[in-house]
Image (cartoon, rainbow, N blue to C red; front, side, top):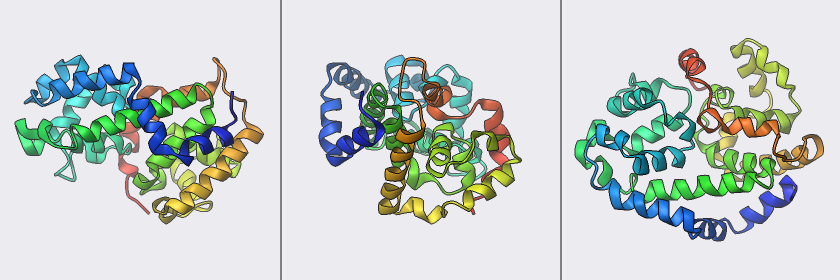
Length: 259
């Protein structure tokens, strides 16, 4: 077992090589080949949801595999699209649903939605990255959290994005020594609290995100129990892979406005 600092450093030192090794794994290659073989033949939301090779692959690519069962929910995400600011995906605090609807833009493109680079090579790239993070978590959950945060940072436009994602929230709590019990506070007060520790603009600066992850991994190694089969940190990547449950998603919709 490697500590979070070492594992994260080894991977990010040559991320391209790590991604290439992951893509060449036989299991990943088979899943990718099936996806690419079928995705271009799909012309509707119904066909998309009905094909387990395509739908399952796509959901994992966006870290949403634990929501694969929720086809009615995902149908609404896809059919309403992202063009209308009032669409379902645009109203959800978790930005991954908007990203999903953008990649598979049936609402705007119809049958041509699966012909785009975003729906084909773009999704494959995300699947490989998601798999790398999952595999990393087998040795170091802290490194997996850091890789996930690093990937998601640029999409954080509101403190509520952090509060809506257990994994992002965990990183912030560990980095700044914020007690987990603060999650019981009023949500607006929680947002105000995190605003005192980090500026939203910092998430758009790769150098500042890197500094943040360096601090996080050091704090994780110093304060957190290392990965084991019963590590409660693993639950951070369940329920939509770090997402919140459906009821809370709907509750947080009214708190989407970025600071």
